[in-house]
Amino acid sequence: MTQNCLSAATLYVVATPIGNVADMSSRAVGVLREVDCVAAEDTRVTRHLLDVHGLQTRLIALHEHNEERAAQSVIQMLSQGKRVALVSDAGTPGISDPGSRVVRLVREAGFVVSPVPGANAAAAAISISGFACPHFLFYGFLPARQSARRQALEGLAPLLYSVVFYEAPHRIIDCVSDLVAVMGAERRILIARELTKLFEQTWCGPLSQALAWFAEDAHRSKGEFVLVVEAAPEPQGPDPISPEAEKTLGILLEALPLKQAVALTVSITGTHRNVLYERALSLKQAI
Ligand code: SAM
Image (cartoon, rainbow, N blue to C red; front, side, top):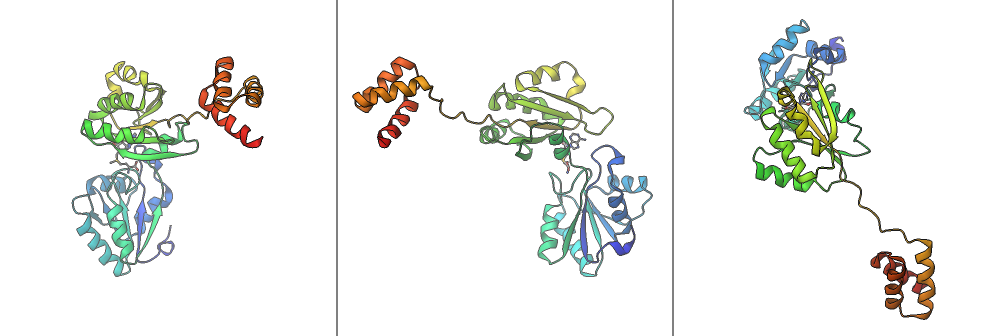
């Protein structure tokens, strides 16, 4: 990529690999080569990435503790017409990583922000889950404290979206225990461990079996994790009325008051009372 392809006074938000270095796009390499400066979550991590690709671009630190201040340096460079790239240690900046605040400030200052998309652990996990039909929700990290974690899960449990969580290895067992307790043992989970790395491993099954899977091998609770929990089951509609119940109800309604006709139809056919009551009301209106 030549410098001409990059626009002046633009912040490029560049995704980097989540494990496998080969997952760096050639466009991302070109942008990191051509920008005037790379704002990085950890300059040592990004220096290594730049070395792998033979790049010597200038680095500045932009992490969660200096994001506002570093954003001002970025804005100053942009106001001089420079091009700046933003990267995090791994994956897409701004997704459970620093980046969101600087992007907002740069945008508010009137400069263009442009994405250079690439690896993201959540997208990688959902893509191999088979659960995204059609909706999913990205939650990221749950609270560290159990009471807050359970409270958050209680809000998520009834949603008709598969939910994607990030979790650290030292909390993975506690987190999965809470998922079993709150989401229910029947719900399926995809455990995606060390994606794109040497020891990549995935397991999919009911939450009831997830803790046993971890217990089989101590290595399974080490590394980086994405958890995808399948959506809550669709609520069941009212029981259908059998043709026999429909016929019985119709005959009884001609001779009896509505309540009595419904009660007798319940006794004769075993159909749920509320379903018959609703049906009786609409039949009466139609008569
Ligand atoms: N911005 C990153 C992204 O785009 O995915 C996420 C950064 S967040 C600080 C790090 C968390 O992402 C890890 O704790 C883990 O939950 C998840 N993660 C990152 N890389 C992963 C990988 N290779 N395999 C599984 N999970 C990963």
